[in-house]
Image 1 (cartoon, rainbow, N blue to C red):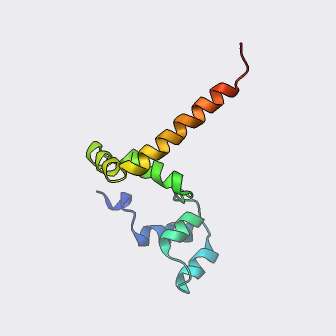
Image 2 (tube, rainbow, N blue to C red):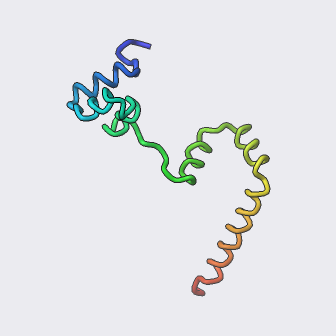
Image 3 (tube, one colour):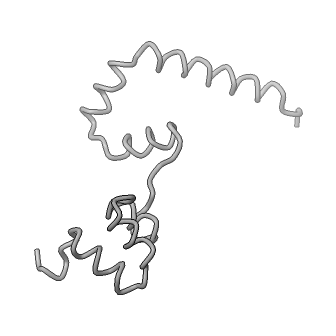
Length: 100
């Protein structure tokens, strides 16, 4: 990895300085904000998923088959309950659709 592509705190502090984020830099200096959080506030990094469902989706996409299988096996009772509820919701929605 070249030094020009290294993304450590010194890189991000320099970028914040270069782009004129003096308020964020002052908060970092005061210990009110971490460099990571400041880069999120500056828009350099995504803030990530906000809801529990978004977090599950975020991590599910990144899990390999074995991790997904282990998760489902560990939470099988809850997964089955939710699948039954979703199935019932789909049947209810289809029953409420107007006939063609």
